[in-house]
Length: 115
Length: 115
Image: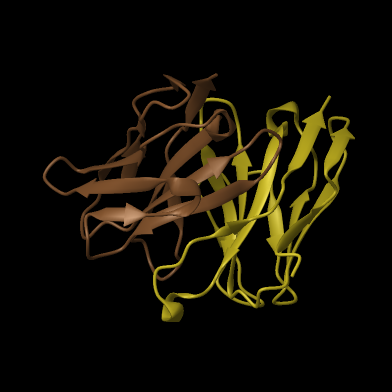
C-alpha cells in the first residue's frame, strides 16, 4: 500500500497564478483533510471531507477550494495564489467515526512558494 | 474550545538519557490525545494515542506517554534517547465539534539529541 500520496512535491508560483494539489489514499478511508504547516504555528486545518462528495471549511479556508469527487482523492485548489500562501501543505486521511477514535495518516507534503 | 499547548519550542538531551516532551491540553469532555513525529522534509508519523484505559500508553520506536487527568497533561517520554530520535514532535487533541475526527495540533517541539 502506498498510503497517502501527494502531487506535486514542490511548486513555485507567481502571485495570481492558480494550481491544484492532489491527494490520494489507498486505505479506503472515509475522512480526508488538508493542512498547512508554517513555522511556529503547527498544523492548521484548511478544509476537510467526511465522505465522497462532501467538503467543509476548517480553521483557515480563505483563498482555497477543495473537491472530493472520488473517495480516494481530495483536491486542494488555489484560484489566485498570494505570497501568504507560501507554506508546506499536508494531506491526511482517517477512518470514519464509526470505526472509533482513529489516528490520521499523513502524506509527505507539498512545498509551495508563491513569489 | 479544545486546545493543546507544547510549552517548549526545543528540548535538548544527550544520547542515552531519558527524554520528556511536554504537552498540556484543554477539552470540555473526555480527551482523545495523540502524539506525532515529523522527520526533516517528511510528513507526520503517528506515534501513539490515548483514548481510555491505562494512563501509560506505549507506542512506536520505544516511546510512551503518560496521561495525567488532574494536571491535564500528556507528556511524551522515552527511557533512553537516540540521536535518530531528533525530530519535531506534535501533540494533538481530537476536536469535539461534530463527527469529523478533526485534530487540533500544538505548535510542535523540536527534540535535539546530542551524541
